[in-house]
Length: 389
Ligand SMILES: Cc1ncc(COP(=O)(O)O)c(C=O)c1O
Image (tube, rainbow, N blue to C red):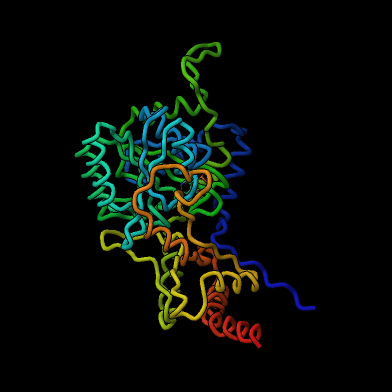
């Protein structure tokens, strides 16, 4: 019996001896708690890496987005606009505060919130007197949204902008890094992200008052008193000191991880260039993606197989690949929400696939992925031929 091929994951954790050393240091210090010296240091080092003065470490990117809305005063009955092309957490947090998600399609050239559609919507709303309370822009698959346009539109209509940079640590827009564009921004350290704490997040802002409010709410909104006193509803959203120690180690290796993901993306582009009907996610001229995931779209009539055929063929070799995010306006749970446009994201979902892109992907693993893609049309056609025989 042949042994099964070791599984190749989409974007697994990539950790090293430095994380282990820092984790053991945290453990041995007995700061085994949701606060401690590694949390403080991680916040400082992370804020520096993004280029902002304030950061608070939290238990997830979702917690960071949730608190972003709470500290901006978004609540029941408010309308919050976001890109339909995202992970569910972006939309869920709008529901957590009792607000209504309003979804907008993405631009075909960035896969991020379409500024023209947003402007049209805010203009119409301003005329109708039903203002939007906030906009959450998503830096999809590690590429910044079009912030020159989005910040201009939001400021003209007086709507606060939140940046969902969960996937975009290390990406740039012009000379600035992802995370600096909104009132505040959320990052994720989930196991599949470019750096991980095994679960965690960070809220960053140029405004110290916002970050301090989030810090207070994240620690159960405990008032300064010797007894337990609370004047507001709080949350238990702090990051463990153990996990912050891992995050510090991960952050130190961020430059190498960015280089590695870019090299993986370059190789896919180089070696798959000859395949008709395979197109890569466009990289906008205004910045540099962190190449979190390499994404393709497949035109079945030109390629000779669908993205589903590719995914199944990769799976048969024990390789994980995933369709692009299913747009929020197509999700049963958000089916009744307001939606503007939709054809771009629907097409991306229909034809898009994320390829294994982790910084620990080996050259051999990537060669196998590339080989499977190249063989898929012939395998699919011969399987179809056999079915018809
Ligand atoms: C775009 C986006 N927003 C939010 C999140 C939520 O982050 P977390 O899983 O850390 O809660 C994620 C990833 O998981 C994401 O990809």
